[in-house]
Length: 258
Length: 281
Image (tube, rainbow over all chains, first blue to last red; front, side, top):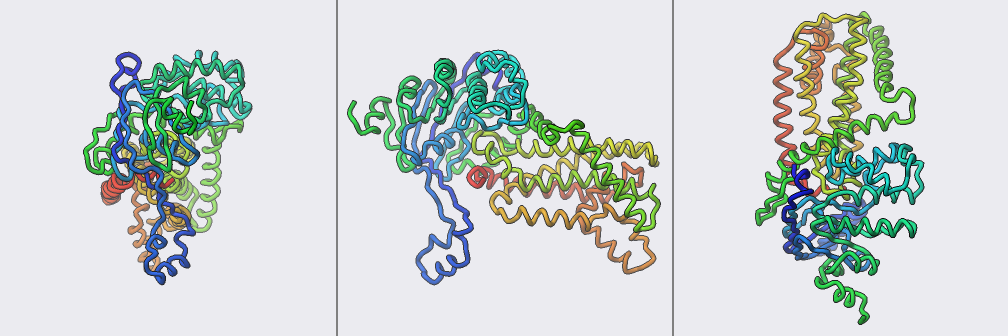
């Protein structure tokens, strides 16, 4: 397992996609109802109705990211940002084309995934860490640091269900920002905490980004993006519309000259 | 974590990725080991007795059924109860692997869509959880041994490889069923009904050998049909050693063949559709 060596000698990390496409088949009951099948047969040339409809979420994505890249991901809702992040994480393997991912991926798309409301905060810290590819030992070494950061004190021994939303976010952020990722993929929604805590987590987030070999960050907050990234990918209709220097892409995306 | 080396053409369906999935999942033992325990503790989280409830409910069910069927078939309780108890415990493991296997990827949709973990992690977690349940139920077996001593000999140790074989089979069933049901959701309710039906078709509450030796030739004839049921063999390889009965080689052969054929099918499906599961869930 390479996790032990991750902290010292960092190996090269990179992500390369070549003409990668992500097509979702929609096996909806409606699309396969008898009525439509019969009509499709009668109509003759409406071949698409007799087959499973497909949503082309990503089309011909060509991206090459190397160690040290700090990439912002912008685009409107439904442009394919999250799908692209999942492609880069290796969760979706391309239906056509190739995606090659070198390095240990820590995807942070949803702060709450893998959290169990019935177990204590401390136990959740451990589980979340294991999910993010850390070893039990590494997490044990970090528990105190995380506990300090979350400022939850004795609450950490209480089941997670007793926590307020803000407390959960603190816990999740605490764990997530304590890991040593090679490839860090962040999907918005990180900013849902109170202002004082946000300042503190920003520093931690910046440190995390510093430690990570490669960052891709999807967000609608220009402020956050400017702080963490130097280049950007602009997604539109499942295609990479522009890939370049951050300010340049942001300017084009906003459509207003800065 | 292994660095995938990518051949130019359709890498998702390569054997190397299939093996990587199984091996990579195995390497994450600490994760699924932890989660498996968590699942058990979770189920009884706010109860005072906790996982002991698994043991208690098994004991109650087996005793009740033992008394009922001992009366129905006119057997002595000392024969019927141990038979039903062991059968029930083993069936619990088998049906658990099938029922939860049919749901293994659907139930883990959130994890699959958010974390790039090997699919096999979920399968190992399932088999491990079922193994822990089995271990809890074995306490009832040990208590039973005190009340109804069985003519155990060294062959009781054969229960260990027998259970290992059950685990190996449970894993391929979960891989295969899990992938198929993720694509065809109608199969989940079908599986549930089928498992229910199989419970009655498999000699768990009724003693197979008694029917074989029946004086009524029609019953004996029909009992022989039970040999077609693969689950009979799964039960026999482990029930016989646990009850100190004589072993039959044919049960082991059948289970071994099923393990090999099953894994071949599971590997084939895993290779072809592994990368599709995250699209389907």
